[in-house]
Image (cartoon, rainbow, N blue to C red):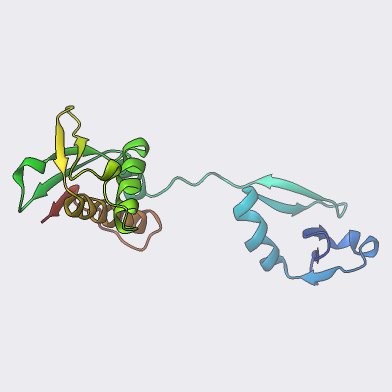
Length: 172
């Protein structure tokens, strides 16, 4: 027997003891209920001796060490090495503010708008504050490398990979 019912009209789960007050209650297995509610609330239902439910906090699980490392990498810096234009070589921040700028300009390039203000190059500062001038093709290559780096980090965080990506991005 299930301990829970789901009310589609209310969009919520209820203890089976409240089934009589619901006109559209559908019994669900405890496993389905826990698969839905536990990840969202970090609490699990526990039935007391009196038949009443209470909520017990789930123990906090630390992410695996590699996932922690991947999170740190995602908010840090990448080293760029250009095989065609050594003046672009440097260490660049991919912290959210910088990442948004890199991806935003790249999106404009890919949409056919080109660089901001229809310029031929755009300056991007490395972590030491030195501006490097990027043309549209180089900038798009940078964004692609950053996206691939972040995707590799996310694969480690989600457990799909056990290898941290290199923080060096090679571009043409």
